Figure 1: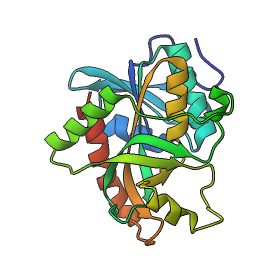
Figure 2: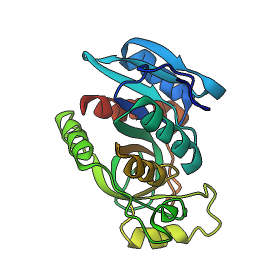
Figure 3: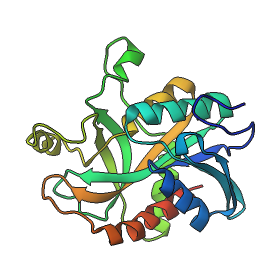
Length: 233
């Protein structure tokens, strides 16, 4: 049953998979949030785990960095393991002046400088959007946890080190809240293969102000986002 990039067996994955970028974050979540967690794959050290949260089966699978890596794992999870719901959890860079470090953001939509989704619609633009049901449940979970999460458009880039820093000022004027490297790809794969997807982030730094979370603070803030994702299930 294994794929070129996932070494799990049939039925090893739950229908809902949370996808952090970092394999060690996947391991951290499994060890600290799930009951009876077991590792189901470790090909290329891209770890995947399955366990339960409050009695509900859930999996954690690392995606790696960037649209190509996310697209590989998302497609194989959907096509080969019949996963229905993919929830990206990770960090992002704030863009909007209204966004502060430590904020939690839900990506209602994801603009991008990548051509990956245009290839799906013969060169035209594709509106990469979250599944409304997952998004609604996520926002409700955040409110229940008394976390003031924000919802809006993000920008998924292929270029971590932006050559033109004034580009972010343009995105700010267009109402883009934050920048990441995976979401538009995830939303495109989910649309193509009939799955549901949603992304939420913790703001770890701000690309316009230069503010950034100290390394020791990142994990605690990240925990809030993980809790939101799990409670939304």
